[in-house]
Length: 244
Image (cartoon, rainbow, N blue to C red; front, top):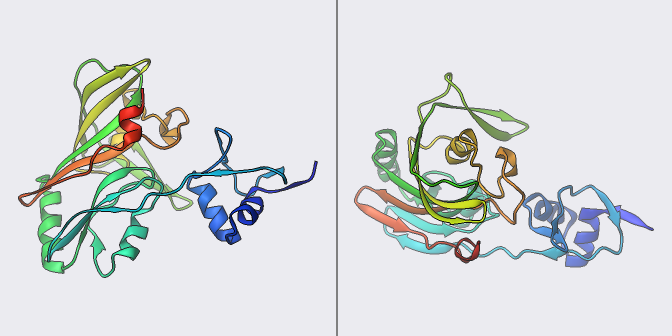
């Protein structure tokens, strides 16, 4: 059997560059059957046919003279959205596989006002997630989080040496051995929801970095944000409503 590196086969199949092919595999967009291709440089059968997930476009939610708000699709870095919407700059970030409300600002005056609201914990942030196991009662986790970076990748842990972080989790639907929940976060540390859910042994489905089972994506969606009198809502993805 002749073998070749996965990204090279994909590049030929899709008519794209090697670097584009590597990026697609790294984002988790490439499958053989129902199995995600994990290693771009892995040697596989040269006759392999890949299935590639198409990325949706960011959907506009709101725009005025101060800010642009979009519904960010999964598999896209927040920085990519920023590049598409220049000269607007990110007010906050969502993880690559997290979808939902993403805000960018158009001027420094509004940015400073908004950041002051974040610092005072005056911004309401509501997420939807599917998690492992059954949550039958609301749970509050008030545990400091310490974030470390290694090889340009962030990883967070509950730690007394960290920064204050509080998350509230409310069960919505229980299906088999998983629960759909509403998450309301205070402070907004790096990977806060993922870290706090792992801490209580209910990691997010698809969040392998924090103990969840493999899935098509990390099942976390930024549903609603309230800031300076505005309310922005990103409709729940179809995958979340169909996920039983």
